[in-house]
Image (tube, each protein chain N blue to C red):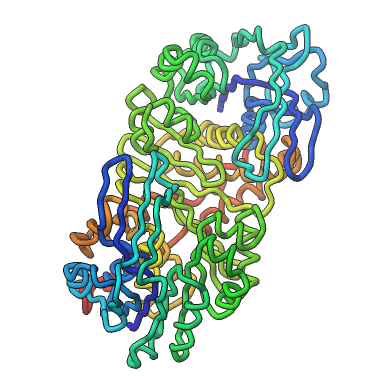
Length: 312
Length: 312
């Protein structure tokens, strides 16, 4: 597999009802590539500052993340500071320091231009296309975005959307992008913008997948203890794309498995702060939780006669 | 089957982004018993005023709802007036006129004391127990409640909960009742109050079922057009209890089918104002949508070797 990811690598300071952490490993591309690495090697395009701890790079390398596309620039690493109240679905951003990320111009090593699967993390849509321009005929391109780009760079975002196979958005973003309150109608409108598939992420409620006439509703795993929801969406995308790149297929049945695996990875990530849970996560645990998702959502066909009889 | 339901029969005035209706048929017991009637006869205990249109009674009788327990009292029928904004998950109550419902004292016809399945709609928990006191050894009792009773009659509600098999609540109610922000922990706390099963309704996101160590996550059907969400929760309960009473079983596999059928009935009800969609709904449509729920949520086992190989 040759899976390329571009996005942020950051140092996060996070406060939840269960504790706080300062300057821990974070960033959309970090969560994405670490989760995807459970399926095979990942090529990471990002930038960090001079202050970025070598230990974090060692961790990523140890997970099979190729850092040949990771630039180290003069200055400080991108920093995000956020707080979650008891409603863990909602992140409150306290501070964003772009630092070296402000001048990020993604450059792919020559050898990576053959990447077959590409994930364009939540960055300026101009830069997303800049990455695409450097890849020769990728097989499957997915992208993420956020309300900021929808509001400030809509035309550019729409141009990116015409060139991707799949968009990951949350429900508020889907509604805003499509200008449509109903999430089903919003997803269909987005399919009209270019992508052949849309995943609408709904936090603790799961995700909806739309492609052509196909709809798949994936439940999230009901967790008794969520410690830190940071990175859940990127972990979802990482599990999804990691599986897709590894399996090589992109039929609907495979997409469904990929979505469930996205939910599996996200369900682990939120169990601890930062990427800590991924440091100990095993393939057996992933496989077991996939089975629990099956058990969680499975139900039988209806008995043939149950609606007949006296009142049929 | 002998399924008894107690609750409100009302005249609703509803405004949604898609239109408005004045003094249309409504009430928790109305939605419940009409939905349950697709599985067999229902015994309805409620009260209406002198102004309640005979045509509505004819409709209920026509659906196999036995009205021997429906009192007609001097005065006006219970009225509810509400509005939904674009977020159709949230009802804004504009006015509640209890009218004859203020003095409602449910009385069961003698012949109904043998009822095997009982649904205690969202009424004063004192009255819920008053109904239970009149039933001899029911097989399965479910109840609904709301924040008002949780806040004003907690002790009485807890007394009712000790006598029921299942509680239907939405997620906010579950959190409030249990005093616990996490919905999984809240559901487990409620199981400690007495019921052996809890269904947490989550509107357009579906429902979670908890019983012992069992958890079932049911997705809602993603609808492109929701016209009026009024009665969705009671319709869910009606589909659930109707199926349970009809099938006679209460194993977990049966409970799962019942929950999906609850979702099926709710998904139809919201497609039109009031109970209008139920006037034309057929068994074939119910069966077909159940199949669509299966298709919507189904995914395969993971390939055995997908997590092995280079990085396993």
